[in-house]
Amino acid sequence: MSETAVVSVTVKKMLDFAIDGVAMQAEDGQTVIEAARANGVNIPHFCWHPQLSVPGNCRICMVEIEQESGDPWFDIACNMPVTAGMHVLTNTEMIKTLRQDTMQFITLNHPVDCGICNKSGECMLQDYHYELNGAASRSRDPKTHATKFFPLSDRIMLDNERCIMCTLCVRFTNEVSGSKALGAVNRGDHALIRPAEDADFNLDVYSDNVIDLCPVGALLSTELLDHARVWYLESTRSVCPGCERGCSIDVWHRKHEWKLNALDPRMNTRIDRVTPHENPEVNGLWVCNKARDLAHLFERPRAEQAMQRGVAADLAVATTTAAQLIGAARKPVAIVSSWGSNEELSAFHAAFGAKVPGFVKADHLPLAGEIIEDHLLIKPDKNPNRKAALALYPALPERVSDALPADMDVVLVWGEGFDSALIPSGAKVIRLCSYAHADNAGADVFIPISVQTERSGHYTNFAGVVTAFNACFPVKPSIAHAEALFAALSADITAGSSA
Ligand code: SF4
Ligand code: SF4
Ligand code: FES
Image 1: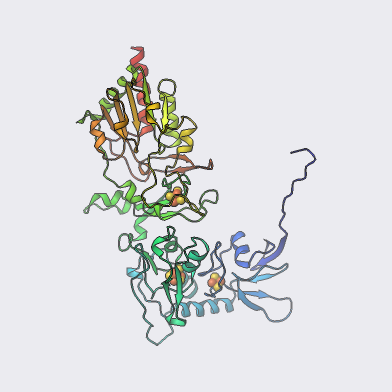
Image 2: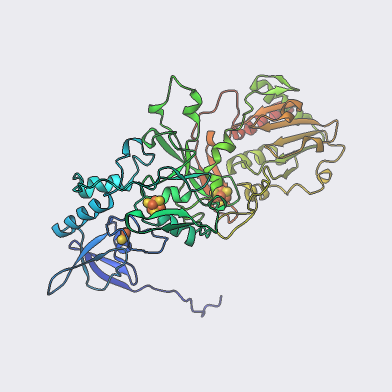
């Protein structure tokens, strides 16, 4: 750009306004609820969402607008733009009364299911009932009943009695996922959320986001249903490895203080659920269902025992043998994982960069029927860190024999997705893998390594954004962390060559 070039920057006009007597500023065009949030003030809301259209149907966000002369007026904060000089009152006696009345109306037919409801502990209706109402129902009429446990899809169960008809779920499928798979039928207290007749909610690969969006316990994950109460769980910040997008997620698992001693101990170290972690640079507020299903990926049968030619070996002995094989090799080759973290890749490169040529493989390919790429998040490479691996090593050529010549004598295979039959006969094989596989016993040295939920690190996504993941569970002593293993192998090789 020349020195005289003019950079065009759009500067948004700012408006002065006030909430409850406190002077604030809002961007021109912001609604009262948006400007309030931007200034750290939360106005109650059910049907409003920052990334969806505004139906204005729940009325819980009602605020009072003070006028210089004349009576104040009332309006919903989610649909009212801020104007210069506006004074918004959120806590007057009239507003408190209006909110109590609104809560009475919204809970009119809502069942008192809290003791058995999966949303209990993170339900906005519970929270606002205590905060804004707290009184028993004024109604003397019996509640209108509706369908319990209506299957919206194979993954999501709907309890119509708990639904407060905020329509967040409907708008999500119309405006974000694009499946248009949900709609509302009937009116008033007979209104029901139902699947659209000309769509299939099973085909919406973002469907589980509606479970998080639902402010009440109307939309239930069939996987989590009756599985764990949320107050027994805690979350760990992580990254979905399902594709090169690397969406930020929270992995939910049992709190240490609530660990179960009497039942199956695996319940203490399993993934109970996965939710999106907001990351504007990567995934915004959403994830696809592949992230929700990470338990199925990580909780496959594990490899937990080091082996030498199929015979159980001590981890330290197997490490020394692997170092001896690499140290003595004339023509070694490494097949590098695209699921290793940035730290593991650096450690691998530091350990073997000068001595062992490496080639990056895809540990995972798209599954049959899996969406390759779409308009929202899903990317074609189903590996989380191939970009970082390719910054250090070239890709494994399509003709694998170009990388593995017949005269190579040692091959180190790191991770899944490589067919051992492609290794020239006569070459010694060192295999590092987390999961049980027939090839493990066939290797000269097999070393089990930890999975993502047992270690911390970073991935670099397709766009170069680096995101951290953290350990959720302890690793067994018989399993190595790859980063430490590479450092140990390097030290053993150096010690061996200088001996
Ligand atoms: S099911 Fe939940 S998200 Fe959908 S309309 Fe009812 S309350 Fe709202
Ligand atoms: S888009 Fe990719 S990274 Fe994001 S949740 Fe889906 S599979 Fe995981
Ligand atoms: S949040 Fe404003 S009407 Fe529902």
